[in-house]
Image (cartoon, rainbow, N blue to C red; front, side, top):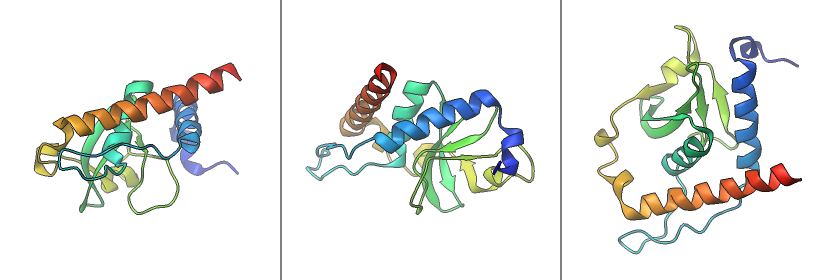
Length: 148
């Protein structure tokens, strides 16, 4: 079955999305350590989006999903959303059309300045360290896939 939306997504974007999806599927649970308060760090969409963006050279966008949930996602060069770690969903990543007026992505994902909700979270050492650990794990997965 070919999804209807596929006609709007370039083959290059589909290749990138499939590589991301495969890498995420192989990503193990990573010990991200503790934050500045000594609390265990839990993987977040904000961390994962930044790590994937670094590897695949995509734009990270911060804002709100469904008007309420602070969230981070990626945007392809042609403007489609790759939701790396969808809010309240089992599964992902997802590629969502966000280019047309009637596309769901344009309504579900709203960019906002992270200062509105992050309260400096993204500049903390523990956050940046977590992104580096996730990036390293994803890089190892991609390198291992390339050699097999």
